[in-house]
Image 1 (cartoon, rainbow, N blue to C red):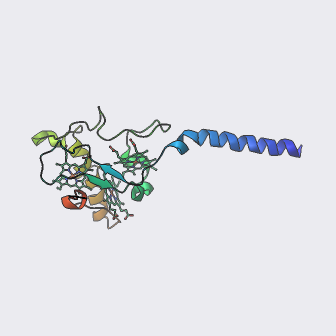
Image 2: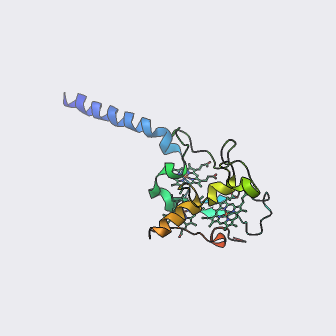
Length: 140
Ligand code: HEC
Ligand code: HEC
Ligand code: HEC
């Protein structure tokens, strides 16, 4: 009887781990050099952005990966086709949902880098940069 119980416990543990298998296999990057727009924009302020991913983990994955439902696979890139896929948007297109510029700089969206940093600054919470050159660091 006792042996059966032990065996049962082992089976349950193995089952729980098998469920977590794909999630455990997914590598969560600590830092990401974001350079999708490199060579595509003529804006002199632009430089690739180092995103300290690890420092954002407490905010909840879906705050940023807001279309991510298939948790067996890593979330799509922000600039994937069908998402924020208009690079180097100009004029009125800059603030379109599909524009990459909008995804990272929208001042009111809680998903955008600047949107969240500004909101948290107003609320006197720990936050990140808002000034262009603090994210777009030249010759890193
Ligand atoms: C919190 C960080 C952050 C701040 C602050 C910031 N940016 Fe960005 N910006 C990004 C990220 C992330 C990208 C995407 C980088 C990539 O993948 O190439 C980006 C991309 C860009 C691009 C390229 C967009 C495109 O579609 O080609 C331009 C231009 C740009 N930023 C200008 C600015 C300017 C001007 C400011 C200041 C008003 C600014 N950024 C402030 C994070 C930031
Ligand atoms: C503050 C925003 C933010 C939060 C919170 C966040 N991420 Fe991310 N994550 C990003 C950005 C930005 C990228 C880079 C996307 C790109 O390159 O277009 C990324 C990339 C990734 C990648 C790499 C995808 C690839 O294509 O290689 C994985 C995996 C990932 N995140 C998992 C997670 C998980 C799991 C969580 C929650 C525990 C999480 N992220 C929380 C913003 C965030
Ligand atoms: C939902 C809110 C939120 C979003 C979205 C977000 N951030 Fe942040 N960011 C934070 C918070 C909170 C901190 C402060 C973390 C800390 O000090 O531990 C931070 C800090 C930072 C820092 C400074 C880290 C340091 O070492 O001081 C950088 C750089 C940064 N974020 C870049 C980005 C970029 C680039 C994006 C978009 C791709 C982004 N963040 C999106 C909330 C956010």
